[in-house]
Image (cartoon, rainbow, N blue to C red; front, top):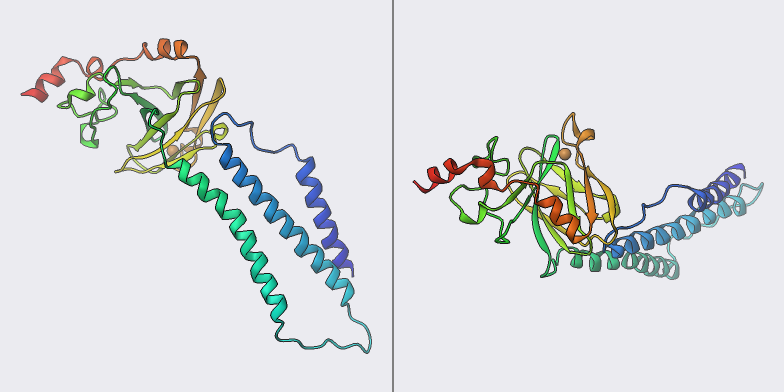
Length: 272
Ligand SMILES: [Cu+2]
């Protein structure tokens, strides 16, 4: 009997906590409202099941409590009950999975007008590479990485010479411009995550992953590495500053191209 009351209080407390809690998602600053909707729907489905199951449990403990002289009946099969449970469980699972699958399809379909840039993670910092005037990122490989070539841009690839190298953990992006981030890692697994954009993706050494989003709000948002990557993991932070096109171009013009960084000698060596 007391257990039934405790369980009922647990349900009431959980509902109160949900509605009164100050902790909720940060205001969204990207196009990924579909991910929020999938999450909120999952919350409602799980919440409804949690409430129904626990109240039923409390009710059963009270209703079927021990009484002198009364005996339980044994009922091994109940086809109606099993059909109902199977059907409603299936409805719940479809409700939770379908919006996520639709959102995921959008997540992996990059719009044609997305600007491409590279975000590189290494223990324990971020850096960024823009394609420069030709609009194409040059080929890169780990064996080309050096102090004056942090992205390992292939010195023999002409597309790479005007790539703009941002050796800073602060990334600026123009407002309302879809961006495709190519994600590379110099050393171990990292994960690019900006909570306000809702989007996140692993950086995997030896391959290139990607994610895309459209920043929809001006402001400064924190980049967090969301994959434990060593003792300095907690310090692997950066910032995304979303601003007007003009401010973005001014910011980008301060950074060197790959050939400015490496000097002409690297190119001559590559040609020879
Ligand atoms: Cu990391």
